[in-house]
Image 1 (cartoon, rainbow, N blue to C red):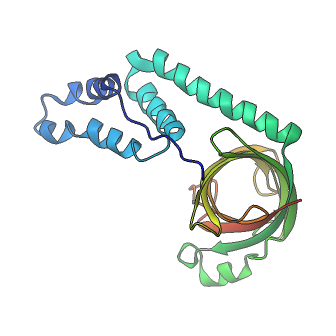
Image 2: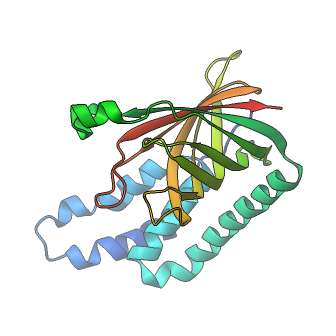
Image 3: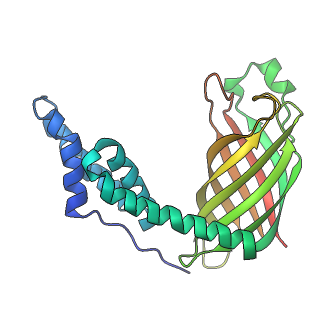
Length: 236
């Protein structure tokens, strides 16, 4: 089983966070509590993998510490470049996968009962993908997927997925956590005009067959959401 190095924030990282967060709060009476924010942030990052931690820290600093943007953006670009190279490897020489969709669960508290009963839960569909592992054992996948949406119309996705997995037991399935960025089209959103999206994913399974699950949150005025969606992948 592969192991992943943990991330430890440097003194410069903590100083940059303190400068960005603490300096404006020095005259506020909650200052003593605010001083703990950078350490809480970096402690949380330390339990994540190196890659995810650095990307998260880059985003934080890019928004709250303009003076630190130059250095952290270089780190971000390096990680993004690795993802691009791994996606290219998956597309050109990755293992082929068949994706079988699926099932959608619409949260009953988000829809009127009569309306919820009319929604389609059998999101039948099919997709094709190619995936490859990088030197850390993380999985990179490019895919195209089509399935029947909640209103019995076709929905189509073209995307990239990153996934890190851990062994649940010495012999058995692995649990994965990751995300997917994609373009999707639906009949009720700009008449099938491709739109960008990003979703978290979890997966459970072995080398050949895996179950993937995501949760689509509600975005007021755009996506009704509050829907869980799952599908199965089979390595060919």
